[in-house]
Length: 117
Image (cartoon, rainbow, N blue to C red):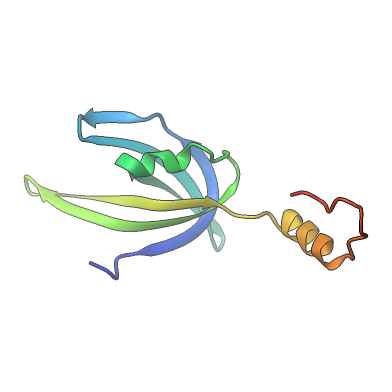
């Protein structure tokens, strides 16, 4: 299902421990809060197998962009769904982006080291 890909931006609330379900399946859960008008939505996403590593360098409280698909299934006449993330990146803060724009717009004097970000 190619059109079942979604992206949203939110704040990382928590990163769970790696859970090894079987020899061939492991999962790590992350929780993200997404602003939605007057109220925020808090959602749990699953990172599975190789995608589990995506959470290793994330910082709780940082803004992230998460790309995911919605998975659903029926089991014993009950329905289940998961938000399965497969791309997670920290977003630049506005201050960092502003500092970068300012630094690259300034003239670099020969012999001086440009700012590092």
